[in-house]
Image 1 (tube, one colour):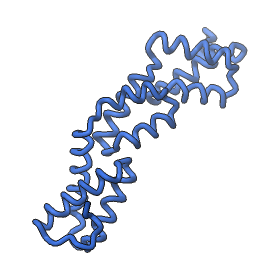
Image 2 (cartoon, one colour):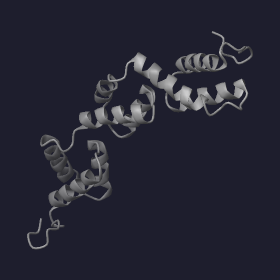
Image 3 (tube, one colour):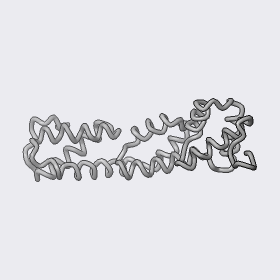
Image 4 (cartoon, helix red, strand yellow):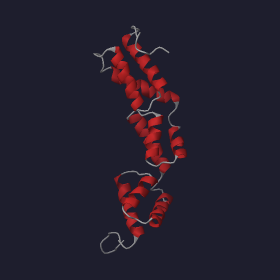
Length: 177
């Protein structure tokens, strides 16, 4: 840093990398991989980037495990995403598969089932005018987009549509086991 201006010394790639990383982290949490890609795009030499990333990791400013834990918590409760979708999102952000697996331990089968049931119940309330076949198709598709396995999706939709119709006939919907 130049003491007179408070800006990065453009002759020192470590200072440039430090300023870039801190600016990125100020905007929001980032994974180490995301920060490394940003530094590469900005032309920071690999050695300087590694030095800064190692130091930021050492002092706790970069923590992929905390990032993954927070991501899983917020996206599973806020958007109702299933483990498969969360795994994909974290892998896309460069989080190591072992860290992803540990973060996904927050979600067990029961909570995933409860989340899917809640999503379907909420959506089903707005679908009263649709034919049952259309309801099933749209609900199963919604759960599939959120990463739920097809078996779970069909089970939850079958249960919720049956409950909504209070035992009405569901023949021809393709929901029989």
